[in-house]
Structures are given as structure tokens and as C-alpha cells.
Figure 1 (tube, rainbow, N blue to C red):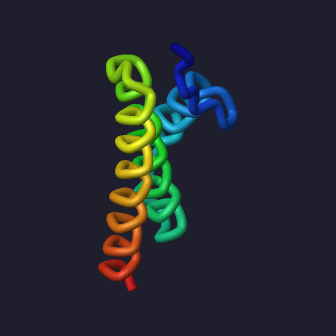
Figure 2 (cartoon, rainbow, N blue to C red; figure 1 turned 60 degrees about the vertical axis):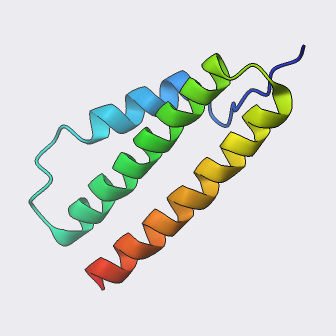
Figure 3 (tube, helix red, strand yellow; figure 1 turned 180 degrees about the vertical axis):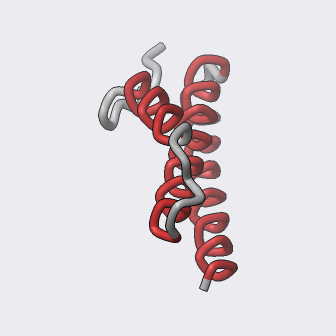
Amino acid sequence: MQQISVNFFGMWHVVRLSAVALIPGFLVDIEIIFLVVGFSFVHAKSGLESIVSDYVHDRYTQLLFLIFLRVCFLKIIFCTIEFFL
């Protein structure tokens, strides 16, 4: 059975880059706060996608979960933008 791999930039690199980007002093400027929030969502989304890819073995269920995750994160991002603006 073929697995669906989510390999946009290389999932391992995206997770590590987004985790490292959260470390610096993020309370310096409002743009930095937006950057930290954005990387937090990228980090959480890529982590959940890798969990689904690893542990859900049925192809259609995996695809359904990945679509559901993307829709949920879009909604969370819209709510966060609404909160900040």
C-alpha cells in the first residue's frame, strides 16, 4: 500500500526550522510576534501531519485526516488574524 507523503520542503527540516524560530526573543516587535505565531502554526501543522502519515495506514482515511487538518488550521489562522486585528 502506498503512503501519502507530505513533503513540501522536507518535513523534518520544516519542523526543526519552525522550532528554532520560536527560540529568540519574540517580544521585541509586533512583526516578530506575528512571525512566532505563524511558525507556531507551521510547527503544529507539520507535526500533526507527520503523526497522521506515520500512524494512519488506510490511504483514504489518511487523506481525509490531512484535508481535515488543513481546513482546521485555516480556520485557526483566520480566528487568530481576527483576534490580532
